[in-house]
Image 1 (cartoon, rainbow over the protein chains, first blue to last red):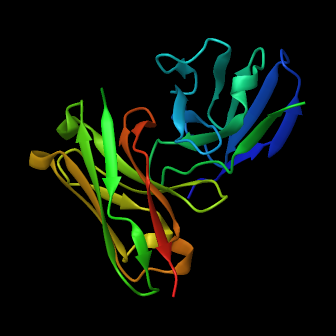
Image 2 (image 1 turned 90 degrees about the vertical axis):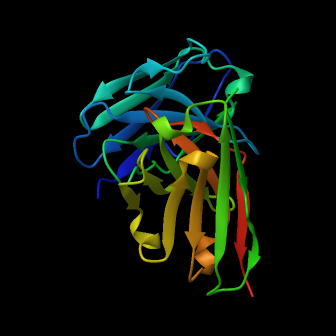
Amino acid sequence: DIQMTQSPSSLSASVGDRVTITCRASQGITNYLAWYQQKPGKVPKLLIYAASTLQSGVPSRFSGSGSGTDFTLTISSLQPEDVATYYCQKYNSAPRTFGQGTKVEIK
Amino acid sequence: EVQLVESGGGLVQPGGSLRLSCAASGFTFSSYWMSWVRQAPGKGLEWVANIKQDGSEKYYVDSVKGRFTISRDNAKNSLYLQMNSLRAEDTAVYYCASSSGGERYWGQGTLVTVSS
């Protein structure tokens, strides 16, 4: 099975900072990659699919890029409401494995 | 408005069984793959299983193969997860989700606790 590895596991940044989270697949998955945001105590929310397509209603400060094995989620200007854990997921085939998550906090 | 409402969770002894249900509304249920995703307390997300629109294809994570069965009833707009031979490590919140470019819509989840 394909493994999904996120880095870093956690980060702390200031409001307004640019934040980058990476996700690496152990084999190529073309662009079948989704990103989710899970705020504390809440249900996960789809942010990006097809590696770079923003889900409707998601703020434009979120963006995704990558193809094959290496992917990136970028928050262009971190806001207090972005405090959450972010997960990547591959969905080209089963099992639709998630990364282990990246916890984002405000410094 | 899309709604997914899970039910059926609870406390069960190791080796026991539970059947989770997910009632869907606000979208054409029969047009979507559906998934179950779980999250153990304080841990990350784990995809568990999914099922094709007509139920003809089903896939599972290795850790539940042979113990869990996913099914659906398109006439009732409902998704199910039959869980047998439950283990302590199956303790988690179980979410149902509609699958379209990832897991697009999620329910609120139902807690399954496996403990003696």
